[in-house]
Image (cartoon, rainbow over all chains, first blue to last red):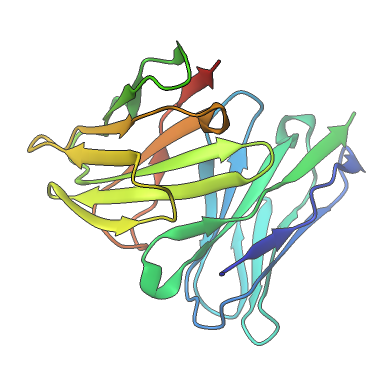
Length: 111
Length: 114
């Protein structure tokens, strides 16, 4: 069974700090990796995608991928209270052709 | 541009009944995927439709079925409801099939089975 693991949190960081969210996956053949943000009572929204080893930056967000270690992370710089949400890691299911989601890490940014 | 629209937003059904959920994708999107979200299991893939054909199916019993119409709108049906089917059902559309097209989620249908 293909799995995506995330620390459920809550992860609490002060405003302005860097929040680091981590995700590991079980299927070595996975090639596509995504981070979704879900506010309480709302639907998930895509914030980052990454396909190659290394870092990908988009504004305050940086996704990091290490396929050898089967590890993907999301860094949020200058965290804001509005970043408080659950962050879902999603990995392609290989031959299954669909996304496999982790259960999410709840982030709380304290003013 | 209108987002993904799911109806109804809330449903309360009794065990043994059946239910149909509806999803209208973003205009121009041809792929529709369905997910079940529960606090214990997180987001779990149900199925994906593209051009009226089911491309992929998750590990759910046959009581869960779906279809897609020629205008890309999709419906999901659950028969013989069980208490464990209580969940948030999310529909997501994407421009094309495959993981290069990002998923855009609707607001979901909250199903409660009593």
